[in-house]
Image (cartoon, rainbow, N blue to C red):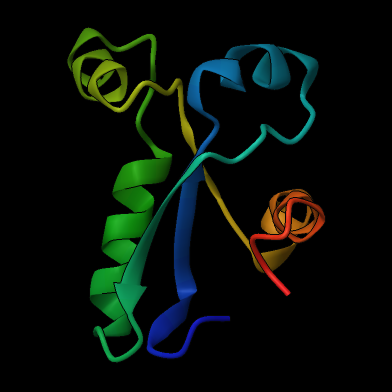
Length: 96
């Protein structure tokens, strides 16, 4: 985990591929992450997290925002969600 980033506030979008993953109920591939600084009040983190997680693509007002972010929904994220990306970066010589 990156120092200074809250363990409790990590959300990611599935990007354009999220629809198929959401329909199959599998974990959507991550492509964009929202984080908060580690010392942000936990209550604020919870309210922000709840707001992102309740965005509904079927709601026209929510869809406007989600379309701008090129996603269908947000999910809670953890370090394991980036394991494949990390492995690919190591294989490409971008990380050691």
